[in-house]
Each structure stands twice: as C-alpha cells, then as structure tokens.
Image 1 (cartoon, rainbow, N blue to C red):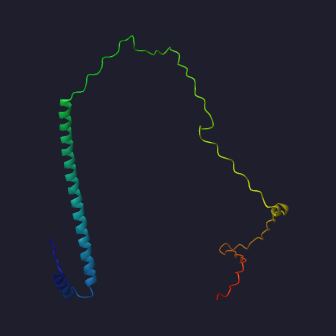
Image 2 (cartoon, rainbow, N blue to C red):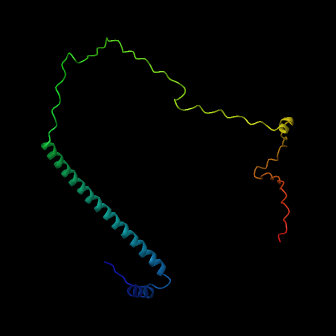
Image 3 (cartoon, one colour):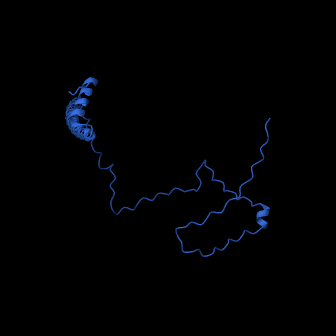
Length: 169
C-alpha cells in the first residue's frame, strides 16, 4: 500500500515546500490531513460493516448446525411417554360453591430470633458551667443598605498564641 520510509518522506516534504511555498504549506497540510481523516473514517465504516456481515453469516451457520445437531439428538433419544392421567376418583375438583379452606396465620413477632434489639443511645450530660449560664441572645442586625452586590466583611478570628520556640542546642 502506501509505504513511506524516511528518505522518501524528506523528498516529498522538500518538493511540497518548493511547490506550495512556506506561506501556504500549513493550510495545505491541514487540507491533506482532513482528507486522510475522512478516508480513514470511510475505511473504518466499510470494515465494520463487512465484519458485521461476516459475524451474522457465521451466526446463521452456527444456528443451522445447532438445529441439525438438536434434531439428530432428539431422533436418537425420543422423549419418554407422559404418564396417563389419574383416574377421576383421585382428582379433586374444586367447585365455585365450595367454602374456602381456612388456614391459621403465623404469629408475627417484633424480634428476630438470635438478634438482639439495638440499644438506645444515651444523651450526654451537659457540663455544670454550661447549665448554670444562659445562652447568649443573638444580636439584632441593623437594616443593611440596599447594596446587594457587596458582601459583609468577615470578622477577624482570634488566633491562639503559638508556644514559645525553645533554642535547641
């Protein structure tokens, strides 16, 4: 098919540079690339369609072989004759006038045998100091100016003081 080695590719590139020119060479390469892409897509589509046709024909052939093998096996080993129907004296006929059969319903228990019920969670006791002091009341906010785009400034957080660094010797 198309077999380019390095020296042939260099010769083609030099001829293209001389014929097309350095200004239009990128456009020409883009054009050639698009056409190669389209050609590859068509080839890929053709190959996938061809593969599907081969797969379907193989599947039809396998189904035909399976049907022949199944028919041969069924001819060698016919199915056993079904037993004759029981005498009418043994058959219980249900009529519409018959009362329904009452069955005792099983007892339903809340607990599953072998599984214990989950223990309820215990509430934690609040510290004594927290119980004695009432919670602080929330502050009332003043009505803000009708500027919706500005965010309120965040309050600076108090930082913990870092422990003093000791001189290591």
